[in-house]
Length: 192
Image (tube, rainbow, N blue to C red):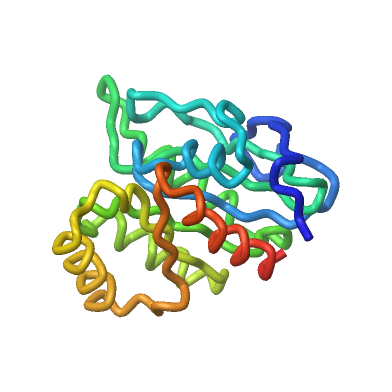
């Protein structure tokens, strides 16, 4: 059993060879800027400010390693789909992810976060294709599901099915529904 509350920030890194040491399994959290990656980390650990949440997109620029109960690292990746001040953060994201994925024997799974209110666009599809080609298990975490009414929720479920995502790999979460995080914790425990 993993005690998700026993969590701490370890370090930030830009390359695989700068990773946190200890030989623990890694679960990568990835998604667009402002999709809710920091909220996910804070919610599954039941800690309000373990990961910094920002109202400005593009805040995370490095891979941030969080040690969860000395069982695994939750690795927060920079968001994609955002450019700031003429800097193409998607290009930086792509380079960092290629280095991170290359021959990474610690990476056990990827949590791909998708905003329940948004369509899946080209950048999402590129990321999903990249992860799929890497042969790493992945799960879709649909964030902000509390913001949908019943018909919008049904439309989101339909859209997810149309994209052919395996339904057993889709987890719906909401910051306002604490029990929604239990399923994600169970998924992570199975992976680790």
